[in-house]
Amino acid sequence: MEGNPAMVLAAADDADDAVLLSKQGRSGRITLNRPRAINALTHPMVLRIDAALSAWEYDDEVAVVVLDGAGGRGLCAGGDIRAIRDSALADGAAARAFWRDEYRLNARIARFRKPFVAAMDGIVMGGGVGLSAHAGTRIVTERSRVAMPEVGIGFVPDVGGTYLLSRAPGETGTHLALTADAMAAADAILCGFADHFIPSARLAAFLDSLAGTGLPDAVRAFAEPAPPGGFGDTREWIDACYSADTVEEIVERLSRLADTGELAAKEAARRILGHSPTALKVTLRALRRARALASLEDVLDQEYRVSSVAATGPDLPEGVRAQVVDKDRSPRWTPDTLAAVTDAEVERHFA
Image (cartoon, rainbow, N blue to C red; front, side, top):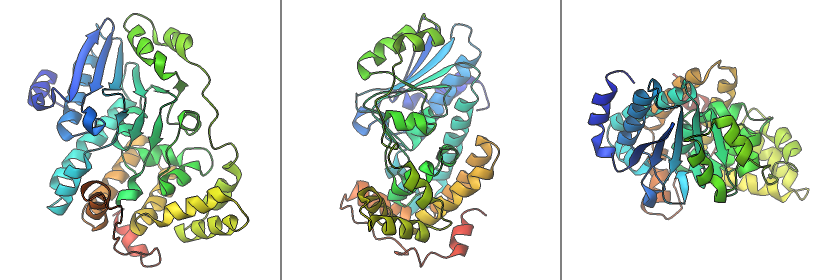
């Protein structure tokens, strides 16, 4: 972010309580502090985090930056989707401004010149992934649940999520994106969203140790093998089913496999068919295109175009209504079938 860091910090004062900043020895600590909302990310919070990085990047007193979340339920449940819905129901300008600054922050974290440690304990979804999974050192615990569940609210994975998902082993990223499934620790490490496992009971001690201990030594002292993940027995059929070129064919392959008794494939097909048909088709196209893009910044540019178009459609506000506002869990998607989503509608998101 351009400008004087001190001036930026002053401009973001209304986020003081939602983002706590402190120095502990040689570490700069960023703590997300909206525990009742599982630290859901607002635009002022994005600006405050960015300003802190501006202030600390060339501060010789800060050797490592640490990101964690207050409240014990998770690092961050994602963006403030109520605010995004309100914007989408208006002219979408506020949502676009939020995404612009959020995605620039995601890229900045990925390129930050000092060690950046993210404590991905508990729930880490959507915007929380953008703040943490691009960090240089990403810690998960036995409580971690890491996901990009955007298709469930009529949206498309963003914050660099399609960059990470498109580079996960085989078709695991496609499976995660279309089903909105969450990863536990081992699968998050396997899929490139995390680096090390530390038991939650030792996480606070690890983060505190960074105030005086070098990061490599701290990781060696606290990291352990992660408990076994869930992808071990499913990788073969995941790769076979999700390599199809269309969502319809993916569902067809899953359904044929389910007929042979593979219950996990049946559940995957059921979950996919419950999501926004438009979001599903745009997500698959975004993942395939992201594989061919050279950098995180290129993918974030693509995601910004996709998000901006999604904010003009009916499914994002309807999905948030169903999941968060009215909580009836019965979204009415428009259109409501995969067959009704045209190639022209999908391509419109990438213009």
